[in-house]
Amino acid sequence: MEMQDIVFSHNVCDDLDKKLASAGYDKLFILTDENTSRLCYGRLSGCRTAAEACRIVIPASDVHKNIESLTQVWDELSRNGATRKSLLINLGGGMVTDLGGFAASTFKRGIRFINIPTTLLAMVDASVGGKTGINFAGLKNEIGVFSNALTVVIDTAFLTSLDSGNMKSGYAEMVKHGLISTVSHWAQLMDFDISRPDMTRLQELVRMSIEVKQQVVIQDPTEKALRKALNFGHTLGHAFESLALEKHRPALHGYAVAWGMIGELYMSHVRKHFPSTTMRQTIHFIKDHYGTFPLDCKEYDRIYELMTHDKKNADGKIYCTLLNDIGDVALNEVLDKEHVFEMLDFIREC
Ligand code: GLY
Image 1: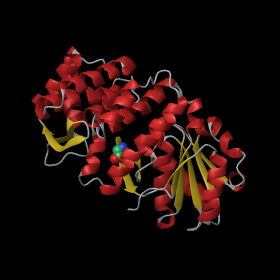
Image 2: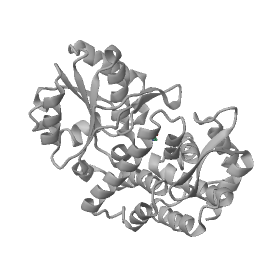
Image 3: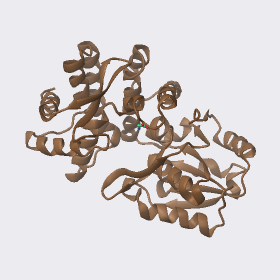
């Protein structure tokens, strides 16, 4: 897989028009969900190229990242005469870029697509790195393919319509990128106030974050080894996310990852001697901005069970990414029930 083409843009229309002019296509489609149709499409409506595009609008939110929405996209591409030379622009958060990328990658065995992420989470994570897919049979991202967007256009101006919760949700993935890269990167993230973000500074931090992800993905595009570094905080985080959903108090993905990072930082400290000062500083930052996951010890067994369903597991064991230090990852660390309970005790106590 080649290095993903990324455009850091200050004028999404100019950059999109330029990319499209050199891409060559016969028909253009723009996919949005109902939210990005309302809140973000306006930024594209002035683009020369967007004016000619056929629009596809799917229902918003992760519950619609499913086979029905996927069928809708295939159906509208088909009914509106898309060919193998057509191009799909995915304008939205991770739900739109994941589903749209999958729809494009499978339509007529694959048409090209451009991602224009509109949330912080999609900018620093979902839209970059070639993971596409949908949820299926109650499992997140169960069906999908690795397929790179032709280009990803990052314009942080879209973030002006993003609420604070979703800003912080995306920032958790940036903190993770800091932890797996360098002390200097991590320290800059700890110094930044994501609750009252300075947008100019955030733009630079977004660029740094995407660079970290790109460097990992180029070395291991299909997650055989190093890409598992990007799962730091997610083994426990996904279980928190699922539990929150079961209890009808859904948590934003990044919040669950932030709480997951507390447990996995602790386990990194216990098992891999991750420095306690760095652990404490990061946990302090997380607690300040994300609060804590409301956890009852009666839920420990369910959390453990949810962790056993993680698709990264093998041979009936839970595999987790830990850290020896900032930028020094320990892949494929096996967690047993005692480790999980110890992490949960730590989270409850701190
Ligand atoms: N979100 C983790 C990855 O792209 O591998």
